Structure formats: C-alpha cells, structure tokens
Length: 422
View 1 (cartoon, rainbow, N blue to C red):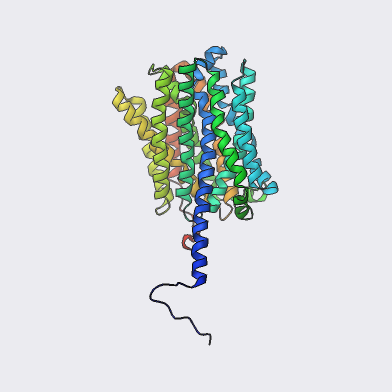
View 2 (cartoon, rainbow, N blue to C red):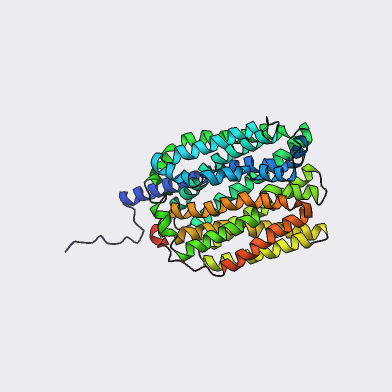
C-alpha cells in the first residue's frame, strides 16, 4: 500500500505547491491582460461604429442623403459584419485566432479613417461596408476566445468584454461631437477616431503567444457539421430567435440615439453626444452586474426578467414628457438592454454542448441579420417622425423577445468547479 503524505497544519509548503502557486499567479495575470486586450479591441470596434451616429445629421446634410440613404449608410457596417461573421470562425480554425483578430482590427480602423474622405453616398457606403468586414472578423473570434478562456466565469468575463462596446460608444460619440463642435467639419471625426485603434494593434503584436493556449481548444467556430447539429436543438433555435429580436430592439441606440436627441429633443450635436454617453455608461454597468449575476443564478430566468425590464424602460423613455423622466427611462433602458447580451451569449455557450465557438457563431449571425434590417426599417419609418419610428422599432421586437425568453430552458452546464479558469 502506497504511503500517503501527512497533511501539514500549516498548509502545503512543498516546492510543488510553490510552483503551482506561481503558475496560478501567472495564469491570473495572463488571463487578466488577455481580457483587457480583447475588451480594448471591442472598444475600438465601437468607436469606429458609433462615431458615425454623432455626426450623422451634418454628414447627411453635406452629402445630400435621402432618408433611405441615411438608413443604408447606418446599416452598411452591419451588412459587412453579416457577410463575414460566420466565415471568420472558419478562417480562425485554419490560420489561428491571432491573425484573424489582428486583420479585423486593422481593416475597420483603416476604413473608418477613409470614411473622412468620402464625397458621395456610394463612397461612404463602400467604406462603411468594408469596415464591417473587419468588425465581422474580430467580433465572434474575440468573443469565442474570451468564453473559452473563462469557462466557469463566462458571464462576468463576457460582461466585461461587452463593456468595451459601451466605453467605445462613449468615446466614439464624444469624439464625433467634440470634433464637429471644435473643428466644424464632420470628416474630422473620422480622422481622429481611428487613432485610438493604434495601441490595440500594437498590443496584439505583443500578445500573439497568448492565443496559442486557446487555439487548440474546442471553442472555435466551425462551418458545416457542428452548426447543423446545433440547429437541431430547440434551445439553440430559440436563442437565435431571441438574439435577432433583442438586437433589433437595441441596435437603434448605437445607430440613432444621438440623432434622436438632435431631431426630437432639439439638442445640439455635442449635447446629444453627451446624453448618449450617459446611456452607454449605464449599459456598461448593466453588462457587468447582470452578467456576473448569471454565473450563479438561472440564466433563462434572469434573461426573461431583464428583457421585461428593458421593455418597461423603453416605455418610460418614449412616453415621458419631462427631461427628468426621459433621463430616468434612458438610463434604465441602457442598463437593462445592455445587460441582455452577456447573459444571452453565456446561455448560448452553455447550450452549445462544448461547441462554444459554433454556438456563438450562430447567435452572432442572428444578431448581424438584425443589425442590417433594423436601421433600414427605422429610417423608412422616419416619415412618421423620428420619435415614433424609433419607439415602434424598439418596443415591438423587445416585446416579442420577452415571449421567446419565457420558452427558454436551463441547459445542463459544464462542471464549473472543475473547469473554471481565470
């Protein structure tokens, strides 16, 4: 019989324990740095997307855009994302995640800069479309990387990752509003915004080895068989439907919220940008707090409750007749509508049966479809008034999303105590 080492009352102080402790510390530091870099990348993604929203009114006037062209310009990046988002996973399988993510950031950064040179609708549309190709390469691969590295804490990790979008949205609309107010031209915003992407590109060069530890894991997006197997699952189909509806109801905040404040509330371009920043800031808190709560509680129940709260927040925002009530509604809708997404993606990850990347590829594809037709439908309803159009295009889909959320089931989760990683 093998002798067992007696337990020490002072704890395990053997060299092996010391090595384990040092490895855990390095793992924690490496994972924290990795999450910070991916979050920063998502922030730059949001900067390049939302800078358009803050200068949409002067841009549309300068280029003499019709309402339908305003909708198409706003949807162009989303069309590009949809064209690439699922293929990006296949490319990451073949070439690794690092080159796909790096290429994505470089593409959407450079084509945002080119947007400042646009002199016609066709040029502006093409530049935003190609920028969307870069976003589609970055988004699902980065998110799958985060979910794969933080198995037991994916709600908190994805919530933190999603905060990058809110931070970037605040920066994007602020850059646009300040640049237009100080420099007097809409194009200046597009020359300044891409500069914040340069540190992320530099960081990705230094972080190349960080991707090697997760490139071999079964968390990447695969075309074909994996997706077909997942599509046979009821929960997967319901989450895809929910993702489409929830994104449809929320995409107007990124595309038209400053435009709403400018057109409906008659604030200045800068004031509209700053008010929008408050909504995005509330969304950042919602993503972290609600995402973290979903790690220890039933995700379907949390998702249903948060979606219902979003519906009520929208109602308060669009029905209010005073600035105080409208601000309260705006903060509520920002907090709850943003909190939907880390919970939804964590639930999709849980439902994927280990095929995290494939599952997230399906949910992001559904989201991408919504981001295309959402702004176009909204712009086509502007003849009813900007406020009425946005209210209809926000409340109807989120109401339907509520109904879908009630049908979602709790999937069998991975053993977190055994597989949780930092």
